Length: 296
Ligand SMILES: *[C@@H]1O[C@H](CO)[C@@H](O)[C@H](O)[C@H]1NC(C)=O
Ligand SMILES: *[C@@H]1O[C@H](CO)[C@@H](O)[C@H](O)[C@H]1NC(C)=O
Ligand SMILES: *[C@@H]1O[C@H](CO)[C@@H](O)[C@H](O)[C@H]1NC(C)=O
Ligand SMILES: *[C@@H]1O[C@H](CO)[C@@H](O)[C@H](O)[C@H]1NC(C)=O
Ligand SMILES: *[C@@H]1O[C@H](CO)[C@@H](O)[C@H](O)[C@H]1NC(C)=O
Image (cartoon, rainbow, N blue to C red):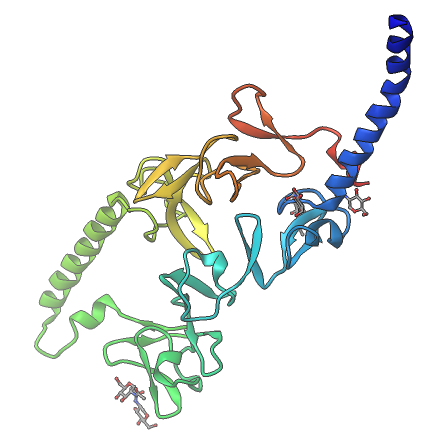
């Protein structure tokens, strides 16, 4: 009798396991998290509204940004924000509010437009439409007094510091020498200067210790070079803190790559298509082998 039950179970096992495999596949088809692999838009939209399947990955529509596995509408100029990705204008940055970056001005239609070079017709509003050190002289952008007009802007020239009839040739020469020496010293000081988190830096500069905060680095941030936490770390109270591993308690934006903070359990959860690795006490999310097989 016992043998018969065992045999029945053994015969049923493939059927039962087939049933579970189908059920699991169906629930996967029910929804893919942002960043997870997808084949069609529905794979993404079924769980995350305003998402789409782009480049075989679930992503927010271009007018939305991702936050805790949801897609939030990008914000207009003047709206409070926490990061550059939140601003809708491609030429805006987040500095408490969404603002045009310094190379652009907010025009009368609330869009960021490139600032206008001297001798060209001013935009609207007039003065703020001109490049740095320029103003709108009736209808055309013009450099302020003491600035030299170039094709693209208004340059303050070292020589303009020493302009005037009272300077004789020798005085001029000495002044120029001192000026060049000062510029040299300032450049060195700038090269050595250490920069705090979110402050401007220079990616082109080779000094590796430009950014003063431990585990921060100089990176391009939507067109502006800034000291930001390395990708393995997140910013917290002016410091860079190591990102949290799968299954660890978290707040939004604190988890390792390919993981996000689950709003229900407040723990880091690997994105769809990724598994916690190593299994017992994971430190990362590893691509699930054969995951694509499920998609295609
Ligand atoms: C995407 O949707 C199709 C059709 O419903 C489904 O067959 C497939 O399993 C889904 N893929 C994922 C990754 O959910
Ligand atoms: C998708 O939504 C369903 C129903 O709300 C839920 O059961 C499922 O866990 C969600 N899947 C993901 C990957 O978030
Ligand atoms: C598509 O995804 C691949 C791999 O992640 C990436 O290298 C590529 O740049 C992406 N293409 C676009 C258009 O986003
Ligand atoms: C523009 O700047 C000039 C020079 O500073 C000033 O005289 C003028 O009043 C300003 N115009 C406006 C509209 O702000
Ligand atoms: C402003 O425009 C007036 C009239 O065209 C011109 O005479 C003057 O030199 C201009 N000023 C500057 C600073 O370009």
